[in-house]
Amino acid sequence: MDVDRKRPDRPVVVIGAALLAIAAVVVWQGFQVRASFGSQALGPQMMPFLVGGFLAVLGALTVVAGLRGEAPARDPDEPVAVVWIAGGIAAMLLLIKTAGFIPACAVLFAATARAFGSTRPAVDLAIGAAMAIVIFVFFAKVLGLSLPSGLAESWF
View 1: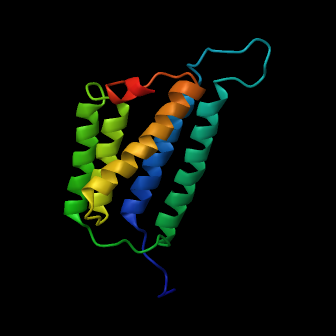
View 2 (view 1 turned 180 degrees about the horizontal axis):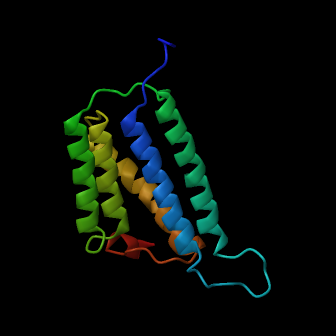
View 3 (view 1 turned 135 degrees about the vertical axis):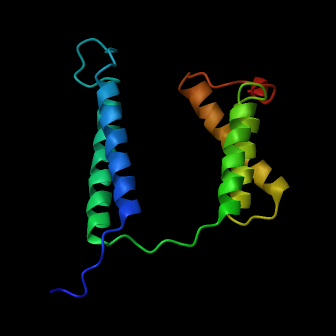
């Protein structure tokens, strides 16, 4: 009997199975995309298949690692960090339709930075706003996509 055999890591197997389920939903939804660009072989429908395939590969590898007990050791839980990140996500959801994309992203970035130990909220808000401005300009001005707009976005 092999005494050194590691035990399966059930939480890792569950995460891998969840990734596989998400991959299946993404691929299934990819079949619902009916946009095309004339006679081109590749169109908007291809992206969900690529993302779904990538998620399926990662999910399968995660399940295998979990069954073999080869997942890396996890850090101890830090509930305060989880609360900061969850609060940042909640704030973003509340702000994005009223304040706009840039302030909502800045708040999320600052909350996440705080969860990772930052003690400079003004600097974190500024960095988050700068990153959100770059993202907003790229998506709204370069790609022509619409993102939730507020007062800050009207300057661009």
